[in-house]
Image 1 (cartoon, rainbow, N blue to C red):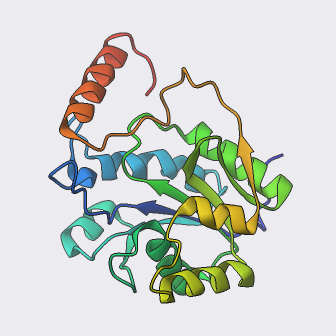
Image 2 (tube, rainbow, N blue to C red):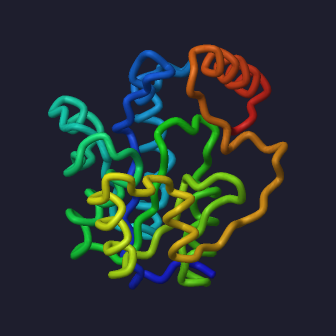
Length: 213
């Protein structure tokens, strides 16, 4: 099914991580086209906006006025510090809950992700009216907003030993896992300099063969 124009969906790029294993901000890593990972994530989401599948894109990241102006997206800072993806999701919901009914959450470090992969999440999530992700990978994620979701986030974030994993969230709320061909690269990410170098090589090979990445 195609997303209804009445489906209020906002895409959020998760780009506020510490990148401690990489040793530098992953969002600003540039590919062989001199495009940062943050710029590429925005470009992947843009067709969904152009086709009215989603309303807009925002970026979960500490405010940088220059970056915000360059990218043309609203930056939303974490309301709670050092709580990982759950803290970012909670912050996004607090700011956006009156503007949308669903969030499409995209990590910034997926250099092979395609618009079609995100559209699949949206279609399946709307059809099943549930959280939706690719099997074995809890992000990217299509996430319906609900009172139980907000209550769960508040409980875990306010608890000293709260479960801060996305897996725990999806287990609690119920979700839909989409199977996919593991030979495909679109969920490949990089957490270390060595992994990023390997990805750069794959990107270069793909460009030489004119393969969409």
